Length: 298
Length: 338
Image 1: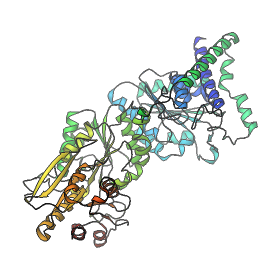
Image 2: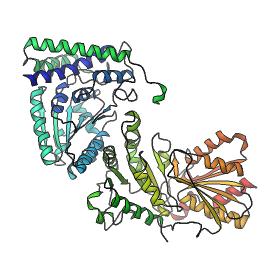
Image 3: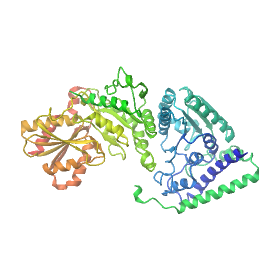
Image 4: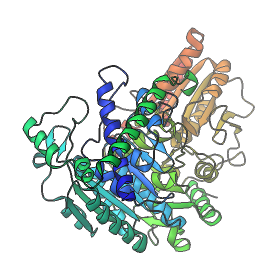
């Protein structure tokens, strides 16, 4: 039960963080761009449940959920999106460019896959025992460097878990217009084993991720987790071209929070949600009051 | 006499021997082949675990090496031909040179990418270019080019172990077999070696002047193999045309620290920049712009010599016509000085 509550807390924190971001964007609180993780929360929470302190996480443009599930600070993430000096990277990077402890993200598609794989190979050479988790989306499967890297990852046995979050749409292009063949087939071509799940249930993903990560610790070789998921929000802000009925349907059938909430006693859930609301509000207010970086940060 | 190739190769042997963080990645770098230009010869036999031959995947291997560099290793990547650096552009521009700054100085990417550039071998349009100009001016990227003076191996060693920033290390193909020169071989010249006045203090600037000559009338600026050809031109100008010059040779192309040029220009008032890249928007253009900003109308003349705005032809006479030659330098100097 404790575990279930803790998982729900992570899910709910990400959900409320992202909703707050989208709510406050039109008010001018945040500048630039953002890519929210609404609907995909169970993926990050389940996979990163397993990591140890020296493990590495490499993320992409849609990185808020990964960062928060990794243990990143709400205030620092709000502040980074506001361009404040207390932000994760003092406002230099913004929404897509985060680094804290062993967490790295970048906004260009595909290029972080070799970076992550090189990191995994470095840790292997150093015999640190660390595993690297690299998140990529279905859209990123269009980038050629991904396949150069999978080839070398398999040849050189990089201790890395590739997590493909297939939200079935790349910005506005549906997957059936962008991806021939299968996702698993891409990894199997290089002899990289995969587990494939079509689920928004954090517990189901947790089991699969745990199995793969345990195998990486044991065999020191790449594995892939393919998660068919749904993106509830727009690609960025207000750029959703999908049918609203389809969106309503996925929100009612595939909401990871709804699925997991049913396992919790309602009083405990309510208390937890109130705690998170307070936490979010405090983090937002703190970030709002935080100063911008001085020009010495240039 | 030691060649530039031997100097680089020996340095890599010493580095792999002395520091286990150093590793080599590249295409066909294993013995007995030892790399397309043999810079990595012998390394894989002595250090089989730290010399990785890669698939033909320039972007992937550079990204992997960058990830290694961010996790405390000191990787050195060989790109077989400099023409292929276009394939690593995204890694260089949007990843490798971005991380340190955009992550608020919390990381370093001490990665060296070595690659041969240049023509005069008849390899044709896609294996003869001098493409470092594409990457000049990218914030956070150091671009170095050894010449046949000083210690190219030491320059490479410092780039690998001393420099914490990513380095693009440009090796002109014709320099590989060139013997290293010093004042015992360059008997008609006096040679001043000074550390670069800014940014990197390990990449020297060399100044060559004709020994016991009258005051120089023009400053020549070059790097890489063009410094060798400019030296030939400077000798001929002195002994066949009685025009004396000061040749300033850079090993650090970017960031540009132009002070040695300014110092020479105080003495000569005339500047000719010589490069093997194509003329438009190149290194010479930046040198001239910086000099114009500093000197304004106090300069008598300024010009560039570079490769024509064309692909490099395979045919020998056509290739020679497109690339800058010592005679081109001599003709330009005569026009500028007289």
